[in-house]
Amino acid sequence: MDCQHVTDRMSAFLDRELPNQEHVEIRRHLDACPRCAADCESLSRAWEQVSAVPRAAPRTDLWPRIEARLPRTSRWADWKWPAWSDVRVQAAAVVIAGLLIGGWLEGLAVGVRGSPSRAGVEVRSEPTDVQAFSDVFPGSLAETVLKATSAREISRSGKVTR
Amino acid sequence: MTLVGRGDVAAFRALVDRYQNRLVNVLYQVVGDQSEAEDLAQDVFLKVYKAAGRYRAEARFSTWFYRIATNTALNALKAKRRRPTVSLDEMEEQGRSVNALSATPDPPDRVLQRAEVVRAVQRALHQIPERQRMAVILHRFEGLSYQEIAEALRVSIDAVDAMLRRAKASLRDALVLHRPRP
Image (tube, each protein chain N blue to C red):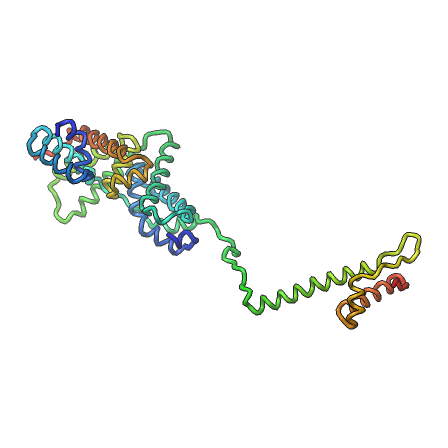
């Protein structure tokens, strides 16, 4: 091992970053070479002086200042969808489904009665699935809806359109 | 860190408590100003909080943390477009405080001599390039290995070796006039 190689590797040698074998070889060279040993000694002394630099610390706890700068979280940030196993969720789902089906049936029933022509001639609608359903199942929701919509139209126009 | 990634403020506070002294010291050694170091430390912690969800446990936390700190410090220095101002008065004041607390007070001439050496080291540190200085601080104050410094600075291990070699040589040259007399 020559002096140039030792000089190149002296920094890593001082920081104990060399493989063990290379570290031993450099140590051996330094024991035998006064010039490299002096060079290593001066470098080591300078390097040790860095540890003499006083350390700094925050004058006060940083947390209050950091906390004040944290992004504000929405009140809904922790929202979680309720589980389907919850009875209240199931009850709400039944009510919503009932409303939707009721609205759908009412819409169909309105379609059954059609709309009067501009000439005032009554237009009869073709029987629909709702009518067929109410004929097969008298007293069902479909029949109730048909009656309700018929009554409403009578009250508006004074005529029965069915 | 997993909890911090989920927005757990209590876990984040514990992280701040644990790292704030070390971080402020590192930043202080880089920028040379206490107030600026504390402001930058806040920025670093907020970046850590925001990026915590992206942290992967296979990377060592300290390396990831110091990478954010390094980028923040170097960007701050770059933004100022100047060499960092060394608040030597403040640093010396701190050095005097350390000496004042010493259990076995040194003779006055010895104290002065030591303060002179500390001042010379600080001057030398602030005259070497910023990335070299960062490598010195991470190694000397934080005890990071060459591998960890390389990851924090996103350079090769050979580059870290070269940076520290040059930094040592610069320090030696700067301190040769301040060698304590036997």
